[in-house]
Amino acid sequence: MNATAEGVTRSLSRVTLRGAERLTGPLLFLRTRVGIALGDEVTLRGDDGELRHGQVLELDGDLCVIQVYEGTASLTLDGTLVELGAGAYRLGVSAQMLGRVLDGRGEPIDGGPPIVPVHSRRVDGEAINPAARANPSDFIETGISAIDLLASLVRGQKLPIFTGAGLPANELAARVATDARVRGEGRFATIFAALGITHREADFFRDAFESSGVLDRVALFLNLADDPAMERLLTPRCALTLGEHLAFDMGMEVLVIITDITNYGEALRELATAREEMPGRRGYPGYLYTDLAMLFERAGRVRDRAGSLTVVPIVTMPEDDITHPIPDLTGYITEGQIVLARDLHGQGVFPPIDALPCLSRVMNAGIGEAKTRPEHRAVADQLYALYARGRELRNLVAVIGEAALSESEQRILAFAARFERELVHQAGQRRSLDESFAVAWRLLGSIPRDELVRLPTAVLDQHWRSTGEAP
Image 1 (cartoon, rainbow, N blue to C red):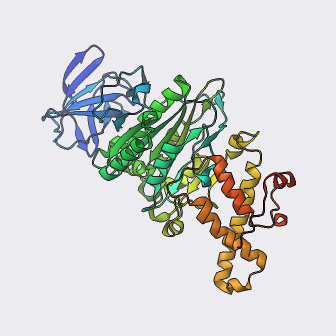
Image 2: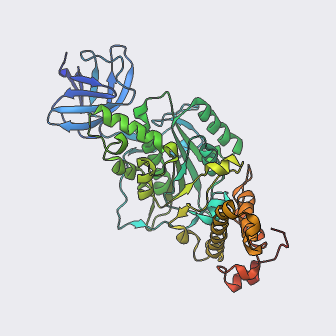
Image 3: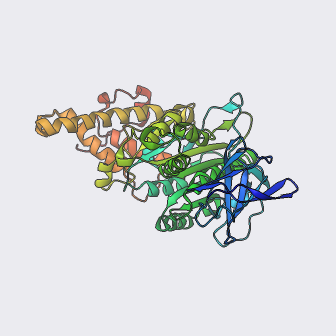
C-alpha cells in the first residue's frame, strides 16, 4: 500500500506534509514539489509522537529521498508528519563545547548546562580554497616516541592509525588525545569522535579524559553501538564542524581524532544497500573514496590565518587486511599511516607500533628548519636503517641460527630487540621529544660509531656516546 504526501501545512518557509510513499530501512520516500534542496534538514513525527531527524539525500523530479537517522521502525505511511524547509543541516558551535560530552549530533549528554552557540555552521563544511590552503607545517608532540621520532604528526595533516581487531587502538587514541601538545604559544584543543562504540568503551574514554586533567580542552562526541547507525554518518561531520570553528574562527591548533572509520564505512554500506545502489568492492558503494575524502580533506591550514585542523582517523582493518577498501582508500587520501602490529602486542609492547610500514609524508615540513632538533631527520633515518636490518636478520636466524652471524650482525639483531623493548614500548609513560631522543641516543650508543653511516660527523661528535652495553 502506497500513500502520497498530502495534508500540506505551510509556516513561513517551512512546509509540513503528512504521509509517505515508501519506507525502506533508514529511508523515507515521499513526493513533493515544494522548495527543498539536497542536504536539507528534516524533522519527522510518527503516530507515537516521537521526534526524529533526517536529511534530504536525493531528489529526482518530485520524488524526495530522506535519510532518517533514528530509522523508520514504527513509522507508518499514512501517519508520518514530515517537516521540510529548515535548510542545510547545521550545528551550533561554541568554545563552550570543550570539556563537554556530546551525542552524535552535538547535543550535550553529560548533565551540564545548555551550550549557547556563537555560530551556526553547516555540518558538510566549506571547502578550503586551494589557492588559500597552506602546506602542513610545525610539529605536534604526541608523547609517543615511535610517532614523534619516526613518523611525526604535523599541524594541518591527516594521519590515520591502522589497527586490527583486538589491538589497543582505543588506548592509543586516548593517549594521543590527552598527551598531544604543540610547541610554542598556540592554544591547543582536541575533539574526539567515537562511532559505534560500546558503553564500556564510552566509559573508558570518559574516565581517561577526566583522570588526565585535560577534559577542559577536549570535546567528546559519542555515537554508541545501540545508537542509530545512520547517525554515524553525521557524527564525524559535527566533530569536524566544531574543529573548523575553533581552528579558523578562533585561531586554535585543533586535533580531531575519529574512531572507528570502519564503523562509518559499514553505515555507509548499509545506506547504499537501502537505496538499492549498485555495489562496488566488497559491497561498499562506489563513492566510498569521495565520501571519505570529504571528511579527511577538511584538515588543513589557511594562508595568513592562525589556527590549524589536524585529523587522525582510526581504521580497523578487517582480518588485518590492509588492502580492504576502507584502509586502502584511506591510505590514498591521507598523508601517511601509523600501523599497529599484532606480534608486538603479543609481546606486551605498548603501543604496538610497527615502525617499518609507518610513514608521515609531511614529516620534513614539521621538523625542518630546527622546528624540533637539527639532527631529527638523520636520527630517524639511522634508527629505521638499523631496525630494518635487524628484522631481516631475524628471518635469517630462523634459517641458519644466531651462531652463524658475525659480531656486527649480532649487535644489530640485539638492537632491533632493544628498539622494540625500550623505544617503542612506553607502557603508561608519556615522553617528551627530548626524552625520546635520549632513549634513541642510548640505543645508538650500543652500535660502534663507524657503523652509524647515516649520521653526519658533526652530529656524532655532538651527541654520540658509547654506552659500552653488550649486545
